[in-house]
Image (cartoon, rainbow, N blue to C red; front, side, top):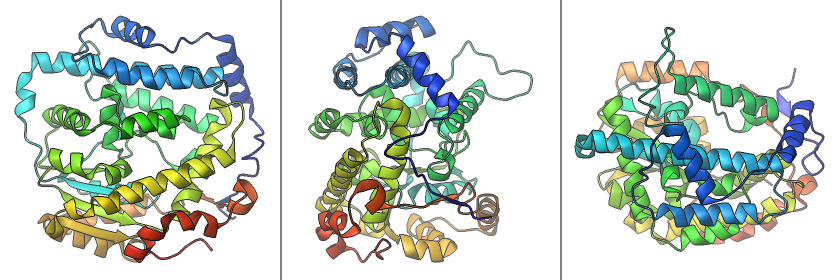
Length: 417
């Protein structure tokens, strides 16, 4: 039996019963998307009221106001926006409270991390999970990134399962029920290694929102502001996580770093940087298919052409910034990984990364990586079949024309014809 997945209804979604119920529930609820509503709810949920620096309120306001003003956003979509914002504000309160009680956390060094940067859908997730299989590395599972500072009043039950893990698992089960093909596109299981830009969300500044909402205004605001303070905030949260579960070196990843190389290196000056490269058209078709599919309950109309235009340009902005700042990367601690080469020789790619990072690729590490590969074969949840022409009324050539400068610089293998 084929494991190919063809999503036939991207432009005109045929909803399942759970999706329809969710939409009906969302429309019946009034969701107030304001800074005060979010902060009041967070304070009530935690019993805390010290958010630290109040400058976050402006950024949160920009985000909420743009989503609130969008007539296309469904009631369910508004609820999801409020829920995410509430989680971020709750995390901010708990992070602040923990640091007040344990200021020594700020003295914990984060030394010589290995950081994967590269376009979304270019192998960054697969690669960071493979590296994280080496138990000498400290990595960031999704469940921990969602709630990095645990509720001090919450007790772990007799079964030993962290309540944060249980909540994340419940969320993942809900995501799969509401979007059955999501596992084939972007697994979000609790133990899946996640991106550290999640740790910037309590400071309300990253490109993360662009993945769940149509917010070009937020994009412009974010790009117009120096992100160095928010990278420093992310490092502080890493110190908290290191305090709870120490390891010698971190392995991290995020595509956002492509356009924030300066702030990244200011925060982690001794990092080893792994830059992934892939045909940008393959990246775009994967991204816009996933986001159009996910929009069927958050928006009244999926607008595949909107995602096509937005993400064709957004990928271009990421690549343009990476070319602009390429010379900032340390030549002796930068490894370029081309997608086709990585797919052909994962172990050889890891060896190059270990060499650049000055880490021995031991027999135990090789065994741990091999065990991960066996447990997570490619296409385990199915393989999505894409159709740029049929679903997005465009051609690979039209999209690829945006990336001439990048393709002139890096010899990526063309995948989409």
